[in-house]
Image 1 (spheres, protein in one colour):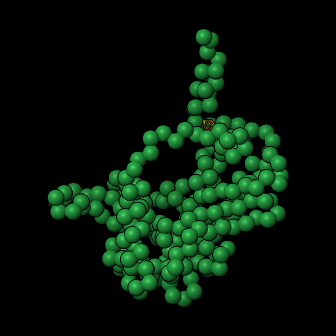
Image 2 (tube, rainbow, N blue to C red):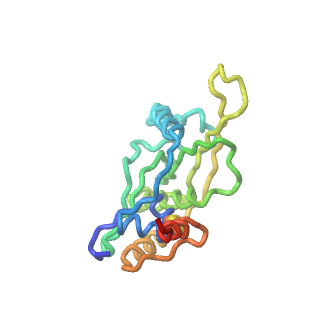
Length: 220
Ligand code: SF4
């Protein structure tokens, strides 16, 4: 790849890089994207409802009741639209869009992200969520919003109950320690890989490249 060609990456790009460098390289250097499959509409619909609901409490000094008592501070006001980190030397940008953020009132902030699920969260944080929060932490700090190196995941999942009396769901908030340096290192490695001419090897845990090769070898 041309070393001056701009690169723009997001947390989901970096997660693709960790999952399979080859798929990541093909996506950005050859425009060959993974088939996305059928995308469930429920999380997108939930995000829209949550955004409106949270915005009603922005600037009021009061937290939305669904998270009140579960986190400190108040909703950041205004919430920045998107955050960018520019690596001028490598002609690369890392960007992200916060679901929301907390303002602790002492000059420190924290990313907050909504996660809609079909079941309660486990104790361990999924690796893609961890990297997403690491990136948000790094982006906030790079844009003059110092953090305490923690982020908050707000999980929403259904519970049994009287469906005719509002759909019952539970809200659980998890505090996640974040490591912005980890995000920076992964970003730099990902950019370095995209500057390589040679296509990386397939992931060891994915069988699709072998399957595609077998299809190619089929005779009509
Ligand atoms: S190994 Fe799987 S994930 Fe990687 S490039 Fe091939 S199909 Fe994509």
